[in-house]
Image (cartoon, rainbow, N blue to C red; front, side, top):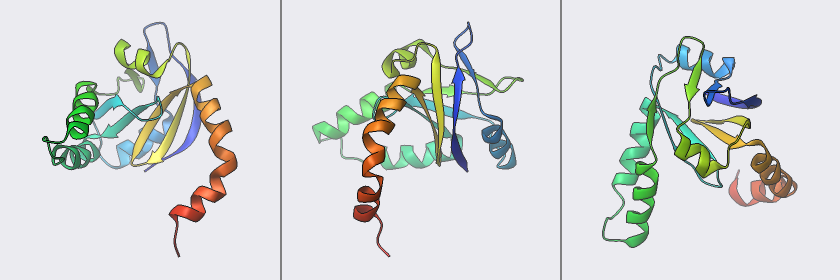
Length: 145
């Protein structure tokens, strides 16, 4: 549902404009509500409400007797905020999430199929620079015919 890479900047109030392609996809799937939380690799994850429910079901079924499960769930769920787009297609990223991701002004928004990721531009550039050369190796390991 969400695909592509877009460069944006935070406005003075800390809002971002969600790319029009993402807004169109959300509208086509009757999405009104999103959930934003701490992601992996120092980015933020945004899920539609339906996808959030899928992820929540998976994670809440992790055994709470295992320390790693408790820690992950605490960090993941405590960092979550519910979002709705304003009339201009903007969302407000909470300060604690901007701090987590190192976001100051310039960001990269990427679509990763079932979620949107928001990265500080310099963090994304470093991730891409280090991971892109091994793209084919990773594909070989993960994808079987």
